Image 1 (cartoon, rainbow, N blue to C red):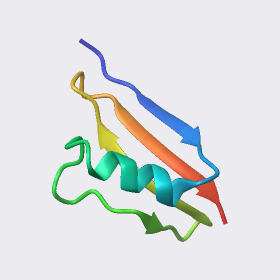
Image 2 (image 1 turned 60 degrees about the vertical axis):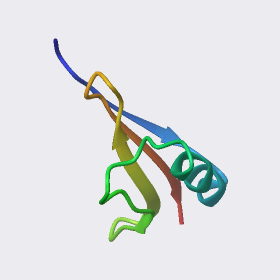
Image 3 (image 1 turned 45 degrees about the vertical axis):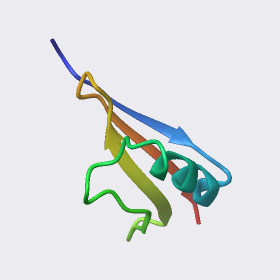
Image 4 (image 1 turned 120 degrees about the horizontal axis):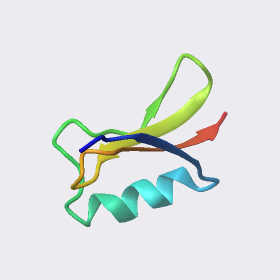
Length: 58
């Protein structure tokens, strides 16, 4: 099976991160971070190993 990577633009990234953090979907190193390319984002993998990245532009 082939996995893919999907990115979603989210306005209220902090609230979504908080909501997902209570759903037991993150691995231990998942974090909300500010990137050098001007986004705030987090990524985790679904059960099929697809990378799901949620971000907002700063």
